Image: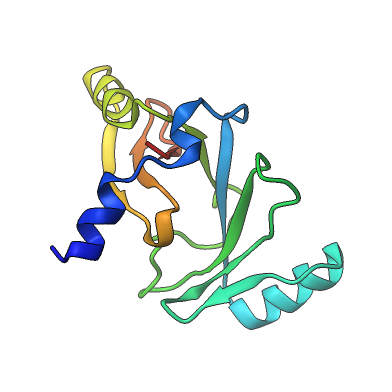
Length: 146
């Protein structure tokens, strides 16, 4: 761990002082052709989706306000980070778990949910995520900024 990394992990972010008002914080929409879909959604919503060379399979919707929820188009396929194909059940909704991500994931698992993705840190101070399959078979995402 570098000194810069250690400094980043010990800083208290302004978001950690209070719980966000939105329960919905992130969504992922699987697409079969990311370029085509990006152009489509940019036109439909008259906006620019953000891309990042570190995540070439994502096109991220902008937030309209600091507290607004957002999400991304995700390239589907064998190499997809999403692990889903475009379909009526392909969207993953991430729910707000600020300050209690580990607890929420533990409670879900103890009640019969299957952990699909262990807690993982997102880049650039975007927080932490995890996923589980609920009792009905839905993929549910969790998101927190600690």
